[in-house]
Image (cartoon, rainbow, N blue to C red; front, top):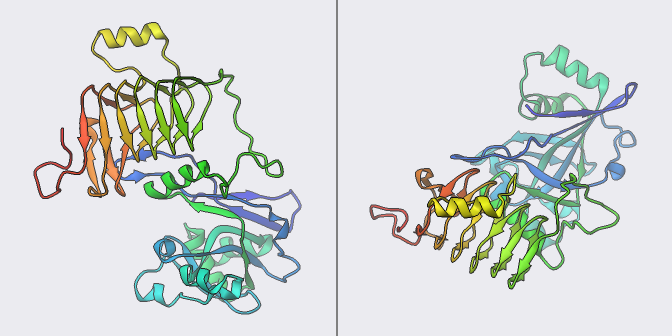
Length: 350
């Protein structure tokens, strides 16, 4: 299990939470994911509530309910039931009326489950007893320890009401990133009360020549030449040639820049520089770092192909979304029009 402990040396209570390990796009999809949330723990009342364990929870919808440990609570907020990633009848049994959490009737109908966020505050002596005495062979805190502890300890729920998004699937990862481009995003990089600190890159501002950019975020060190970028997030050092069109796309950028001389040499040799070549069109796609996409390429999925492994050609599809893995190369004049009927011999037209 991947967990972090945060506590002063003499503290009687411990904060246990998930640690983000980074992300890797593999053939199975998003291999390391998790959740993104923004919160102050100042409103979490642990000692005052008399709890031995406090679990941070939030209401979730049917689509995501089986991805989490689900809880039921009484009117005092005490856990009366816990089920780890239930399905079928076990999932139905965890259905609750979330209007008790302050949701409107309409919102409660959309989110009829209470999910554990994997964030706990726990008395140190209780934790040591659970780990050393009761469950010395346990490997998973959420699956093995918490369900049993809910029956023996005073476990209460803290209802989280700030920004939270699951990014454990390809689709949710794409949607969470694109939501940053909204006029009033639920998660903002520009909130002075909740500053976002990033690593210093010492990169120049992006150079955008004769391009159209709508509802998008462009990172530092990019070069865009006569491009059309709509509802997209463009990462560091991204390079796009003339007449490139991107929409609903997250592009990670690159770990390094290729000088103009190097790019010219690669093109002269019939190879593909880092970035996206001229006259290329891409829709609703995730492009991982250091990808090389050639000229006159078309990558479009019109909601037909659900899953496909075209790794030999530099991409695959998960949740309807084309993904270009890190360091992949797609040559010039490759057209992946993914509208082709899956009953045919191909999942993409070339």
